Image (cartoon, rainbow, N blue to C red; front, side):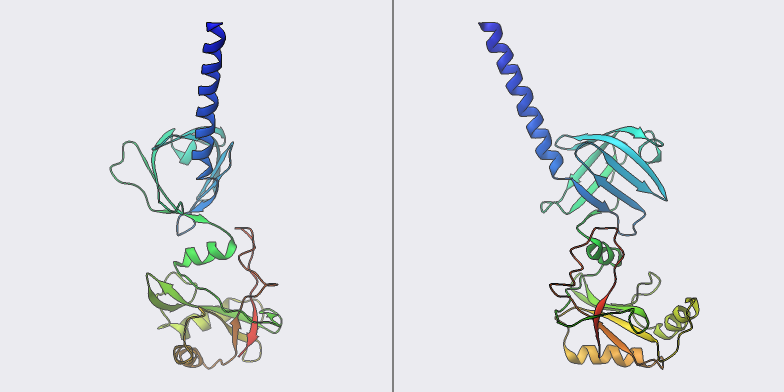
Length: 250
């Protein structure tokens, strides 16, 4: 009888341990990336795919309250090194992950949770842009080819820029416009080149007009404003989907 009771107690403890482990792992399930996209992480319940510098590594993984444990399934050693155990820290809202080797004194760059393709795109630009809604939208590719212009917020500060990591604003917009046009296989001119404007819905008309004036200094005037609606939901996408903008000419 006592042996049976001990077996039951041990079984209950094992089940509780497994349940606790699953709950902890659930906090990391999903897609993650550093800002520059050079390191990506896909956490599944039974595996972790790590992608870096064009290489992918598949691992079994587990965690406790502060440690992340990896065991290589396929490919080279995890992270390209013979490391099986890392310290990790997760933000309170579960959207930012920090990891480091046990021998490191500081954590690496923040690893951000990626919800969808639009979220991934903006996080790589380090911008927050809540697009306005509008009905009767057309594809940005329907009548031309455009250079994307992003107007949103970074740490509460208004930022207007292209996708280029080399520039922080629109100071070099003429150079970027002509470089973009030259890079396209299709011949572009004033009839089929446009600026695709992704502008946060809180930006007022005066600020928008000021940005448009800067863009028009290039000699190109076609403006395609990107919008969102129930039929065109950029957030209802897989994180690796290609994004096609929809909007109207303004």
